[in-house]
Image 1 (cartoon, rainbow, N blue to C red):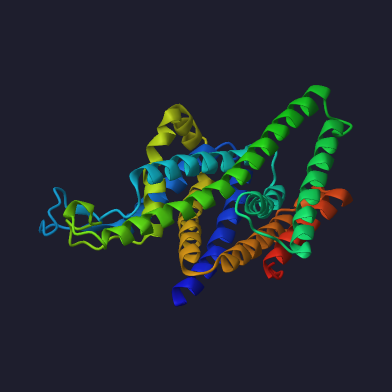
Image 2 (image 1 turned 60 degrees about the horizontal axis):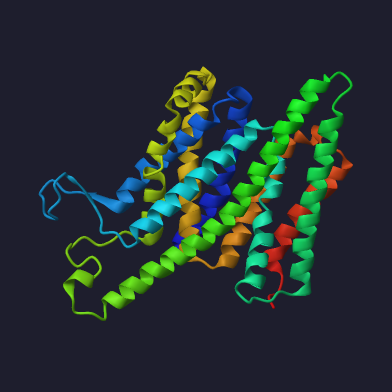
Length: 343
């Protein structure tokens, strides 16, 4: 339980600090989000390496190089699928901030997984939900629709001094950002379900291996190294294998790193480190606690992000009454959902 408490603190503190630093970077070096995502991936891969590897200078474990990876528990194809999906989601999730999507709007749209989980649970998993749970998800959906429609209307109208072409271009890229945000949010729901399937498949293989006497079917039978926790293995490989993918746009990496303003260097480094704290805490909390605890902790973090961004960075100046009602309704419903009785 102490590890779960630390993980919850890591989510509430690390993830909150990560988003705060992200907003500072958006103000000082706004066109560097691809480079920032690369830095996050690199730091998470390096800092999580000790969780899945040991230093072996004596060749006690038969490794050719001094750094010896622990035996794998997850299937290779599952790790590759997780890596590609997580990479696409991370890159798109960060790039939407460059498409006129503010942090409060981003935090509001992150309420959507509750609706997606209910949809999948009802139609595909045979789950049933109470009337209060349905009301919450309907409120979230209505709030997101109202926020999107009102924001779109205001961007089409623009300010009196705005050029027609500027309004049209800004509105076009904002629509692209909203679509990308919707896709990444839906994608994250599917990714969490895939991770659950991945862990179950690995446990089934391990359970089956204990019932056979065939050495080739025994999991990790050839090594005296103990395997890493599955969450640590998923964390490391999903980031380490994703690092080379950034070099598909090597020219963009170089140009964005060159565009970082000097006062943003420290913010970049701290953002990458807090990303490691945040994502590691989420993985640990997911493995040590119930889904209720995880959802509640993430919801509290999301509410904290919204309040800090609105007050500290002054986003309250850019929302009208309709947008305030839409955002507050969606966030309040997502905060209440984990506390409601189940069917």
